[in-house]
Length: 450
Image (cartoon, rainbow, N blue to C red; front, side, top):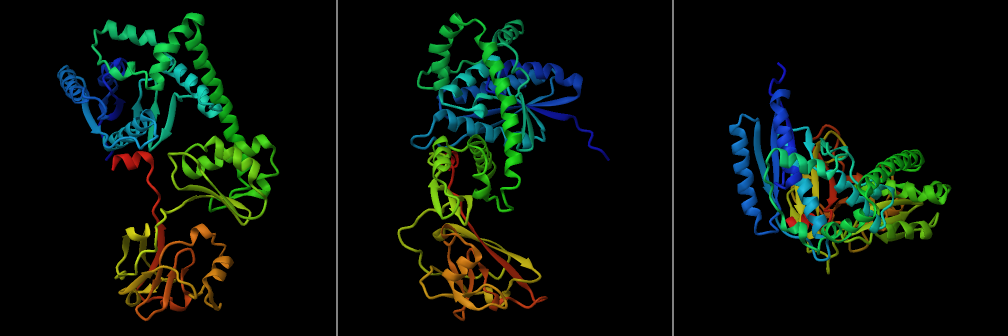
């Protein structure tokens, strides 16, 4: 039987003028359209007024629900604070969007409405230009985007600010006032208070002109994305590694464009400009090298050249000394976090190419000491780890992690190489596959959120 419940639309709701008007307009239309509306409120924990804002939002939603509007409220609170040197605005924005996505998903909403309007778009273009942004940055905010299983839509992005102000007056809405909007320490607030009045006085059509520039930048970025996809298709292998020889055959502009698109595809974030410039000037066709990402939001992230290919690597935290030997029972499937080594052992049932359960009942984790011998192929020879690493193409940065030894002092498993083939269980015998997953360093948002 088909689900007969009404569809749910989520609205990001801060209580300010724009989000209040958007929530009001959505609720007025929802009943006729057979929709449920959920207001999503994020408590940032940054201002003393925030507790009162939440209570106000709760009472407002109760009042509107009594009118017969199909409305409910969900809220979440951010924890922690920005890491030293991080932008307060960026931290709050990342945390807010993360919570909005989570709440909308829990409510079964596939559409999330955001209240930004044309003035917000124009301000974003100016801020991105002042930060040296390229077409991606100058594209500012899209009217619609798909991510996290949601459609994020800004239905008022082409509406001027005075149209929203007129709506608020007409319906006698009383929005909250956020004192941070007058805080000159915040870049957008400085722009609104000190720059925008003079700009609009000198150029009356600045809002529309800058919003139009964003639209053209979006069109340009779409073309660049298509070009990058064509250029990268023959250059990126199944592991996500970028083949340098072919990349260097592109023109300088296409090299930079492909590099940025590749980095975004590997990390989900834009490449720092300083890193792009270094890679364009320093990457040789052969040899090995590494470059730190050089951005506070990407601690431990490296771009590594190895065997003619670039790859993104998240380096595990360095320890002063190798952890002490640790003995574990790994004879049951599951994930076994090993904080001392900065990673997790993952064991899963398999039909072949695994280790027998008896061998896994007492396994000791030890650091590499030298002199260990490992057999990579069933018909091969046991050779030193260094030679096996070289044969398998395992770069130096991927050779960390603990060596796993059996109770009979047999080297069973090496991160980056796998299981020593001499000790593989016979096909059909109960056995488990084994892999090592290094922990990724936390982002600034995750660190501050605990």
